[in-house]
Amino acid sequence: MHALACACSVLLACTVCLMSARAETSARAIYRCEAGGVLTFSDRPCDSNATVHELDAGTLNTFEPTPVQPSARRAVPARKSTKKAAGAAMAADKHKQTCERLAQGLKDIRAKQRSGYKASEGERLKARETKLKSQLRTARCG
Image (cartoon, rainbow, N blue to C red):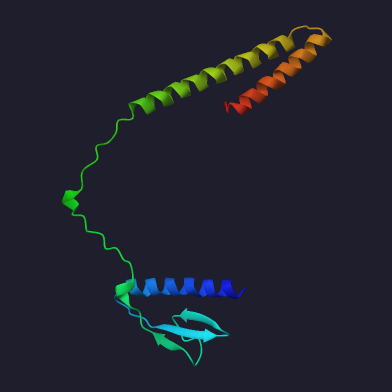
């Protein structure tokens, strides 16, 4: 448990140090406290024994990226999406054909149900109708 508290304190200290090192406009004090044998760092005094911790900015690893001039940016040409459009059109056409085929099958079943048929054929027609309705819902046909 003591190791976990120590690790959390070190993590908090590193975070506070990095945040304060990067905040050039508002230099805030970091307070170092020791309570119950655990060393902690905070942006507020922990107790009356808190001391101000001076940060050595020379030991921190920082990276300052070079600014990119707007004129130096290369314009990226717009990609032609003819293949995507053609693929989407083919998929839409295939979906439409599937929906039409399922709807026609359902119409044929219903036409057969309206005409005369035997009981055994009626059960087969009813099962086929249920299956076609399910396929229509699965294919999301309107």
